[in-house]
Length: 341
Image 1 (cartoon, rainbow, N blue to C red):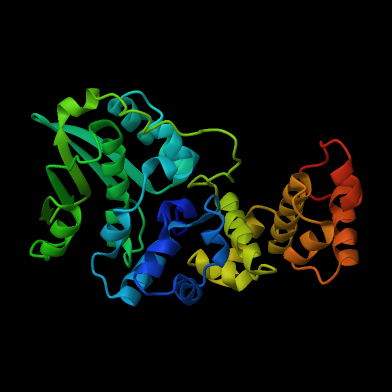
Image 2 (image 1 turned 90 degrees about the horizontal axis):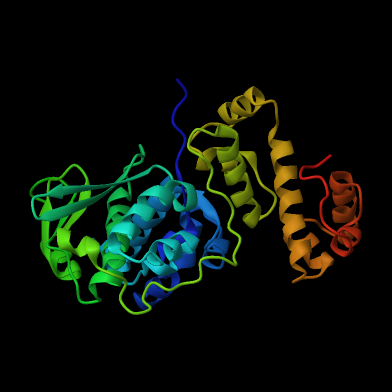
């Protein structure tokens, strides 16, 4: 059986990470460089990254700041309604029960795969849990604390900003220190659980949205699709597209982010009847189309951003993909081939 590939998440799930780290006196760009992630994720929260790479980023950031509660402290600044289109959709629900239902239904398709949300009744209380189905362990704890913080903020959109859970249950070994987390969350912390969860009064499920707290724009912004967990080719293509933010994609970089060797990656692509070069061409073509359609930058600037040394080389490549020049594409009605030809 082939090893399981990483899940994916949007960079938006890191919340206001750059400002948060700047206030703590540390450099987010240095941490990104250390873990080999593109700086573009700070400006483009809609892009997708391997979930295991987010784990690694949080682990490295925690060591950089010397903060054992890094994920929890960052979580105090996140807002669910600002978490991509997914968060806006969840927080536009009329009741907490509906918001949680939306969260469970949409998280894997809209925001993050390899993530399981569950809700169960425990007498007069509800227990809401989050679990990451990932083999990666370094940084998982910080991501769990960040994830549960989004869940707490979701409830506050309906129960009020002063609301706190009765308990936060943490998937850390029994005997782990709790004082720091109890200070951050301002509530009781319980350790030794199989999954990270919060408990709250079941009557809160009927709470209606507080004022305009959940009224956020749901439409109007395109986001790249989250690759499905079993779609190997889409997963490899997503990492190849991520690599494009750092220049022309390198197969060794993509293989490393997927946790496999170069040879294994090439074998996976061969099984799907394609090559790494073809994936790179697809990514370049799709990125070029989006930038041409937006009209925000010149064609020369597009060529440079995509790693071409000059406009002539980009124009020749685009003609090969689309059959027409970049300027003709920008000036004509859309509806050209979706893949390079």
